[in-house]
Length: 184
Ligand code: AP5
Image 1: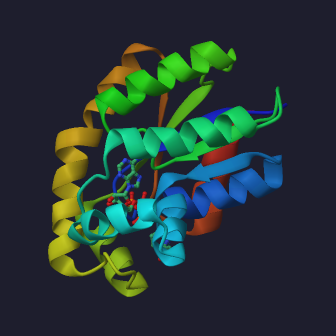
Image 2 (image 1 turned 90 degrees about the vertical axis):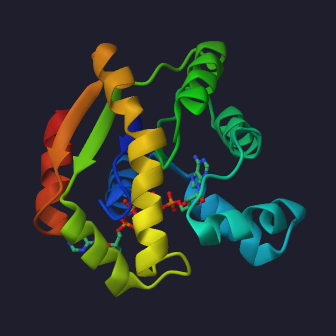
């Protein structure tokens, strides 16, 4: 079965790590807006130039820009092909725009996986990674942005009966097994 999944959770919870694994074992399109934006920055495209400073500050890139990227990728996905959205949507306007797009494509979300982890562990994981936006001040700001803008989506998807929380402590394999169990 081709799943249609969304991964939600704070920075450093392991969304990207788990999404990549699940997408490869289940043959899903892994759509990470963070990765796509970083590729634009690396390519020096006009879109990347617009996004670079915003990302370095740990703020959200404009909804219009992110939506254009997601729309193009989802429309390009073969009908009936599964997908996994990682790092998108990030706020209510993005969630509403996604709902409209998926209604248009006739591809409703099947499940929203919420990865839950304490701030102390998140910060430790991100500091040991050392990406351009992984210094302590920017990490704290990303966590604030998550709480203010993204966490309201927990309620939004819970109300729709789509949300499944997953304990994101432990090894990559342990967390992967918890997520896979939700799909069975
Ligand atoms: P994005 O790339 O989405 O970053 P993020 O949400 O801050 O998430 P991270 O990639 O930091 O964490 P993750 O949960 O994916 O964890 P990961 O698996 O990497 O966004 C970056 C920026 O892009 C945003 O700030 C914004 O500016 C912009 N952006 C992106 N999407 C946007 C949108 N929709 N709208 C507007 N702007 C947008 O793991 C983290 C680390 O922990 C890794 O080193 C990993 O190896 C390690 N790790 C993972 N699992 C474990 C484990 N079980 N045990 C130990 N270590 C682990």
